[in-house]
Length: 103
Ligand SMILES: [Zn+2]
Image (cartoon, rainbow, N blue to C red):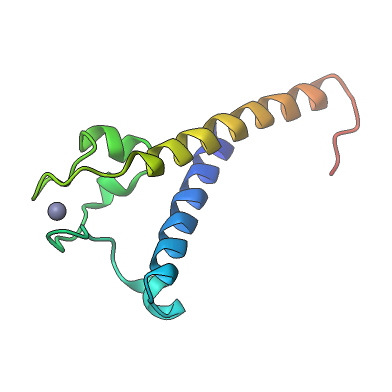
C-alpha cells in the first residue's frame, strides 16, 4: 500500500512537472512554484494535493471557482496506484514463497 501511494505521488509530481515544462516554465519555476488553480490562481490546500484522495474530497473541482479538474490526472494516478499495488503484492508473494525476487 505504501509503495502504491508513493508511486501515485511520483506520477502526480511528474505529470505536473511535464505540464509546466510544456507550458514554458523553466525547471526551477516548474519545481518550486506552489500548486494553484489555472483559472483563478488560488493556491491549492495541501490536503487537496494528495493523489486520488484530494480529487475526491474536492469533488473534482477547484473549491474557489468550481473549475473541473481534468479526469486524465485522476485516471493516471489511479492506474499507477493499482498497477504498483498489484506489483507490490506479487513481489511480497514471491518473497514469502522463497523464490528469488532480487531485481
Ligand atoms: Zn479555481
